[in-house]
Image (tube, rainbow, N blue to C red; front, side, top):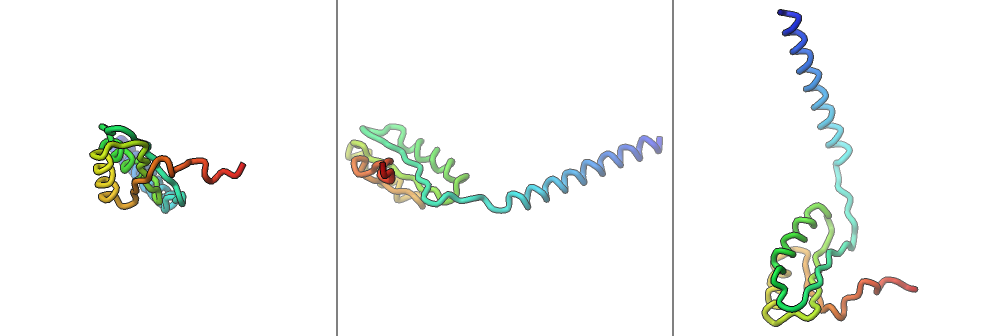
Length: 112
């Protein structure tokens, strides 16, 4: 019976040590999350934009795993009421802005 008990203690000791080493290695290897400077999460919206609040909430969730990212709401023909909501949501967020969709071009940086 002592051999069985010693085996169980040895097993749990090995599992415990493996867990400690695993956690320490994870903490050292993932100490800093890389940032991507200038990363934009663009949300093009038009009309009444019924799901605007949900979409911004989802982008906020995505942005939490991407440090340095900004949320951009591109107004591609919003109604006045939806534009007011977009402005409100952009003011409420830290790194968010509303821009006119006609002025916002994704290929502006390409020199072809």
